[in-house]
Length: 129
Image 1 (cartoon, rainbow, N blue to C red):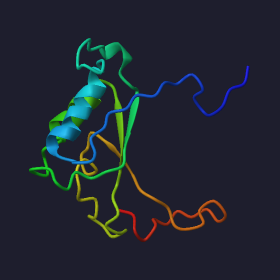
Image 2 (tube, rainbow, N blue to C red; image 1 turned 60 degrees about the vertical axis):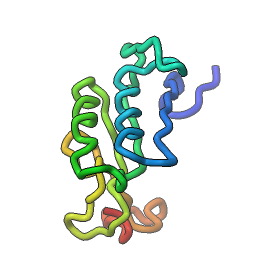
Image 3 (cartoon, rainbow, N blue to C red; image 1 turned 30 degrees about the horizontal axis):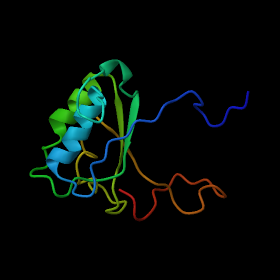
């Protein structure tokens, strides 16, 4: 049997929040991850929720900097690790500004300097928060 990747038995689940990127679209996706349902929005099944979700956005159009916090905390309380992009506002302190990257309930990930594959570096890339 041929197996590819780090998790060959894993399954993919997806929720489309873009284009648009508003409070309701992002929060709706986080709620979907807690209790996935069919395409008609019926038959919720929390038993098939993901273990980890990956998010590469900042909700710059959200109504407040706290809009996604309750949904992010609910996802964590449900046992789901929410991995999010730290942002691209630069490597200075206090540059993770867009939600959900600055919430305690998420795991924010930034980028390392250039050529990290050839010359490992522990320096944050200049663009990365």
